[in-house]
Length: 80
Image (cartoon, rainbow, N blue to C red; front, side, top):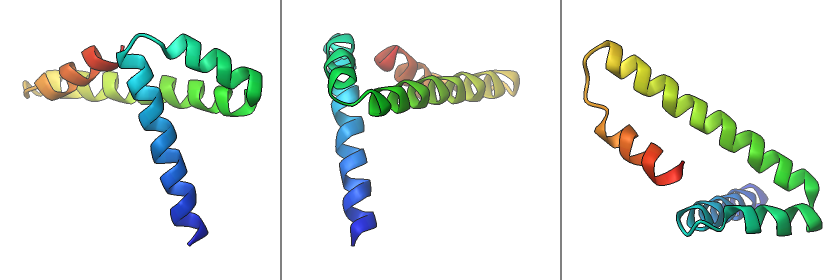
């Protein structure tokens, strides 16, 4: 049960980050979070960099094989 609660909290937290990104308010959210819990802010920043790198690598791999990258392009546009 605790694992489900932990996963639910992370899902909500990531959703909050994505929504703040879409609204152009990610910096404000990270600043507020850093004041309250710097470790969580660092974890998010690291996760974001790694997820962006995975999307870029996937796009390059699909491009190399001549596959459609429109869904990844949309994600990159939405979250960059």
